[in-house]
Amino acid sequence: MKMFGLYLSLFYISLFGSVHGANEFCVSPPDLYYANVNGLIPGGYNNLIKGDQSPCTKDIASLRYRELDGRCNHPKDYGSTLKPLKRYLPADYHDEKGWNTPRLYSVVGNVALPSPRLISWKLFPDISINSDLSMFTMQFGQFLSHDIGVAPVPTSPNHTITCCQVSSRYMNRDCFPIPIPKGDPRFQKCMEFVRSEAAKDDDGNQINPREQLNALTSFVDSSNIYGSNLGTSLRLRTENGKGALLVTTLIHGKERLPNDTSSPPACLRTESPTSYCQLSGDGRVNQQPVLSTQHLSFHLYHNYIVRQLAKGILKRKGFKTSPAHVEKYIKTVSEKVKEMLFQEARKIVGAIFQKIAFCEYLPYIVGPELIVKFDLW
Image (tube, rainbow, N blue to C red; front, side, top):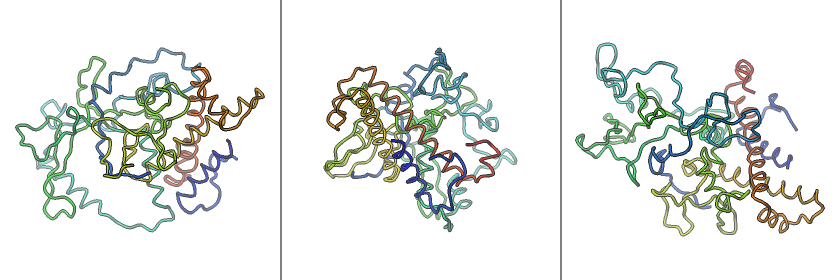
């Protein structure tokens, strides 16, 4: 099992690009579909906050496993889900109190602010850069970012909020459509934009000035594989959320990610009979094929570890360890042992993911000097 984890790490390193020698840090031996990329919360924000958000009351020092929602992972619950994002500069909204309305005019001269699209178009043009790093460097970065943050967007019941083709009289209060400048090479007149959810206090009232929140844990804890809340975790596990293994779907005899049957659909499906939206710990799993593949890799690796742990237990007890005997043991063992198998596998997957992120990936991105300066390894 240790060798398999090492091979997985080396596989990821090889995909980042040219390897100019061993890294000095942390040295140790289906059909895919177009995504409906919206960052939506199924059922809306109020459904998301139904989970227990009370402060941790457990003895943190005695906890063997990380909490899914990040509570108890820090003495002050820092980094847990649904916490307001910390600002580098104070908020400065357009309304009189400076609490909520997006800025429309400049601070100096009271001049109308240009379209955000115009700024991004003119200041950040597409450029080609010769690099030793591969496209996968970006794609793993996306996968990693989906483990540590998402600013949730509100929805209307069972559908997304539309802003561009709605008169201002009937426009949703969270709409802030972006006008498109003339000559734009990609868009026509309007870009859909819905403001992210506002953070709320313990009584459900909006925090003023308006603050944005993180719906995920801020830790690199593989929440993109296992979910940042109990509901998602239970959907991903076999035996109605009590099994040690993660659910898979068989496509042409191969194990793939489970089917996401939520409404509205999590992606835009094709007409293929094998077309389905994939379910994982993060709702953006369907955004692009390589992202989905990374989710699948760690998803299946969890099940591999569970089977290896079960095989080791059977071997120590002197029982047969054939694949059939291992599967039977995993299904028939007590719920307590199933939970142990699940959590131990989750812990190992999280450790391997952290090693790849901090020891192999970050040095390529920020350089060894900053790794040492900010003690990132």
